[in-house]
Length: 341
Image 1 (tube, rainbow, N blue to C red):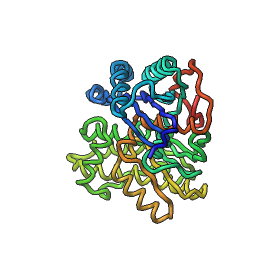
Image 2: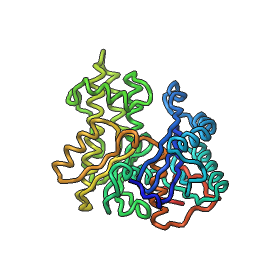
Image 3: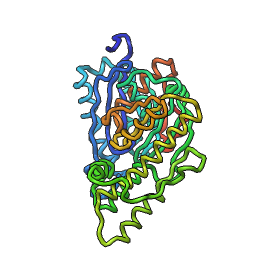
Image 4: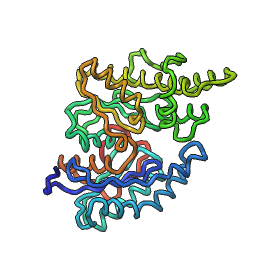
């Protein structure tokens, strides 16, 4: 239950194609409202930055008002504003940052510009409570595949490894297109894979045993495309299941390698691909075997949302971090080591 003396933080997320607004008090979620422009990008097979930015402009005010209504609050109740300042699409970020600055100035409350990736870590606290210190976090989405050591999500996040080419979610989207499945590819491949055999095709595992904690999925994506081109006919569920298994095999092995290397017994998985059913199942199986405690937010908190931004903002307020200036920029390439600006 929320402590009514804890500040109410409103978080704004516009890094890609979801306009998300969340409201939290401490680690208690009060509202999480999202407007997605995904349907506008589907016909292009990927997110179009200009379309996403325009959609954020149109959705911002209704989504903020919807979140307040969901929480039963008014603007005068809000104690702080948090916003994704990066990384992400430059134009999309600008919309959110500009709106957050306006709300902060108009309401006379502090502003916190936060890192999108660190917010994916912080959001798990809304479901499972305070994070262990330290923990290993693996973030997997359309734009990021990252392994992090997190001593303190509000102040200290250390990069251990990242994608050197395609992120996991990007590979899902591209393979889905090869298989004739809709965009975004992740949910459709997950669904198709349930009817197929993960052992049907032995697709390559990039950088599996290279001694690093980095990821590579571009070669896997190309291998799937070439295999499909060489066949007279294919069984889509088998291809989907075999591809998916190759991805989650690498992800889970690398994550547990990080836990072992840094002697950390808690693993958090976040980001849109963390909603994948096979990733969740294999991660649980391997964590149980290794004696590692696994934390994965429910699927609705894995994809981009305002709740995760509000959660990290709440941590910053609780830690006594100095608020951001009103002239903070939107930084499309913000490094994970920059938790707030």
